[in-house]
Image (cartoon, rainbow, N blue to C red; front, side, top):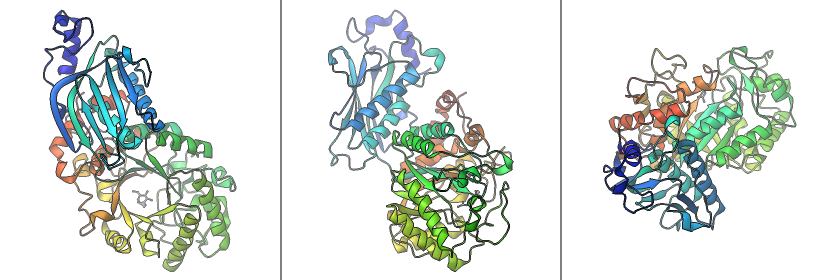
Length: 529
Ligand code: TNX
């Protein structure tokens, strides 16, 4: 039992006399000492200074936000919503009748000079107020996640009529180590619904991840509606690994995902993988096919057998339309063109293809992202290279040399589709088995020897979907490893420690259960069930 639950008893019992002021619900004088620095916050913040008292959250607490920036008010409403979901308290947001509020949570837009990082924030918790400072709504949103984690995690059967929830006082100053902290979801090998993606986004948000890379096309399925080329989804979307019925996102569905992500300050990066991994596209429009073999739907899990015809002008007219339609509904700056494992494309054709496609990406005002193979082409220094092969880290150094930034997704450490161990129910093993400790114990900062820190945009954990068919199986592979990757991207190397992390992770058991997340109960963590 901790101080949060003890308070319930204090308030329910005869100790009401011990309150600071008469007549009002105040934090009891005799509550056990709090310790903000002992809270199980993931990712671990830069600096936490406890002051050992408590803020009392109840129905009289009101949320206010800076009025100069409407996006701060949205963050306030989001906080009220999450508090309602866990405690059933309905807090007012920016209601002017201030007099009735006994305590306030104020989300303040600070001068950017004070908080340089747009995702950075400061949290000041005293007995009477919680002040969250950030220069940008993104930082306010990240700070709200910290606040959510230190508010009591209340299970459904204890929320009724609870008078006062205690929040430990003190100060937190925080900002991310890396600006790019991503997760990739392969919706091609098996299709996942908009609702599934939203649930994944909610979990990503809680752990301060800020980018969702959607792998929208592959040999087994094309998953995004392109109005000028309807057979892509009619034909190419109708299959998946194992012969299931597949599926696809209409452009409206895709916009819904983007809006849901944006409300969580998460950027979406669409990927159309080419010139390899294109069987579903060529099956839909055979003129695209460059490997000369007869086409049939592909429901297996081999890679590297398909290619676009890179020497045909119609191929580029098609790609222009595809990039154009997706770019028009993608507010973020990036467009991922894949480029991995084009084993049946001749090298010179591959390089020519990537250079042509880069021009199309720029034409539609996007920045190219490509898997590490694309660094071999004559790409613009603004392009971003995603490193995935542990054996090809030279491509990271090459990118740095050319002035390109890199995203680190080393398969033997960061691939969520690798099995945990030989007993894992789902997953592959080609890169490694990745138990939860191994997933956490590596350093993006040093994994590629001699790669300058300035060249590293951040990290991303891809979840390839050959072996998972539904959200529950997806979660089994993603959790808890994704939570560790979130910390690797946010928390500086000197602050990361497996022993400390595994204890904090254990304290998230109830949150994961309350949110119905099917996480893998590794024996490496003492889950609190
Ligand atoms: C390699 S990683 C692939 C994917 C597979 C994955 C399975 C990468 C860029 N390509 O096509 O799904 O391995 O782990």
